[in-house]
Image 1 (cartoon, rainbow over the protein chains, first blue to last red):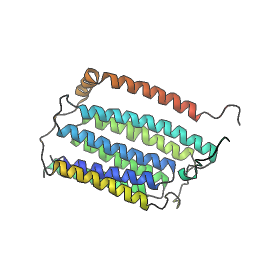
Image 2: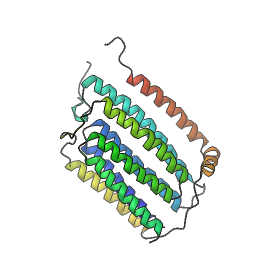
Image 3: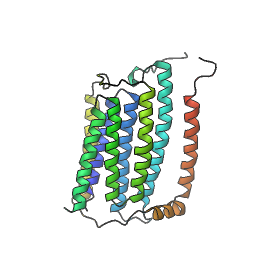
Image 4: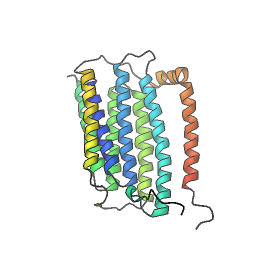
Length: 104
Length: 166
């Protein structure tokens, strides 16, 4: 097995996620791009676990499990924030969020 | 090139193609469905890399729960059903940074691993991972459980309508 193949697909997936985060305006699509990046990181962790003989067995896979749990928590809080934004502004376009607004 | 290599390359190509559709499609709902394809292909790669438990957790938690949550977000924010033209901002900066990140990481990995070959990894079964988590990673495990509780409470408090309003 050649570990460079999953490593390369992971780096391309990460690049796609970065592009999505920077280019998308819809906040939900932004969250989806973040998921792509997290998956690329997980793929690297699991491949490294299959490649490198570490002192503790399966450390990379345990880390991947932790990252999956963190991603679930992030999506939950992110969804709540997006709903609040939609309620306040009736839009989810991230570049229409005013950053310099004081007290309402 | 062994069968594992060919399958890994094919699944990687599927994941990349679906990922490209996620960041480029003009339909919000279709982006969510392409995300399912990309995450499923990554789960297949986990299976080929002998990470059995991680693959099924990926299917359960990502494809099952996270994508459903994202589709709920699409519905609750009343996203347009058809194609919409204003999903992207003019994205040459994003294209530049994304290509740079992908190419840079790819070059690092190519330089680090070349065409080196490794033997078949041992299977990451639920028994092995469970023993590892509770033998060596107990503190992170507990911290993650506290964080999940905090995220749960945070989501409930944040998404509550403002008191006294409407």
